[in-house]
Length: 95
Ligand SMILES: [Zn+2]
Image 1 (cartoon, rainbow, N blue to C red):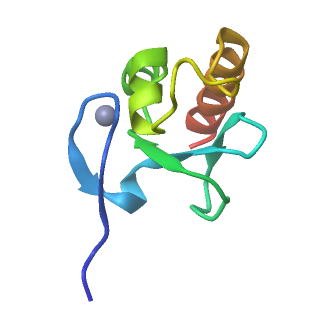
Image 2 (cartoon, rainbow, N blue to C red):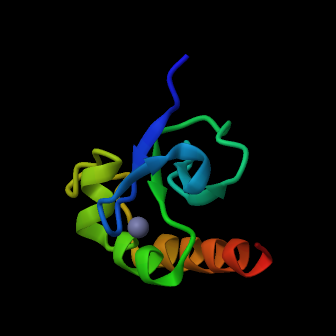
């Protein structure tokens, strides 16, 4: 059995999936912290610290991680990113 490894989209370090927070992109386009790694939709991973989270939550980086076409109707915007920032900050404060 292999141990799942994932790469943080903030610092690009590869580590055990269990050490990272999964960010899920829901069908409605929102980004949420997915603590159980089970939400539907494409996911990206980030270290549980504010430095990595703030590096990760940049439109360019998210577009790449989630393979979003920046010209599509379903693209990211600052509201989505600000809400994701609040959600992830809350998660790391609780840990
Ligand atoms: Zn990181």
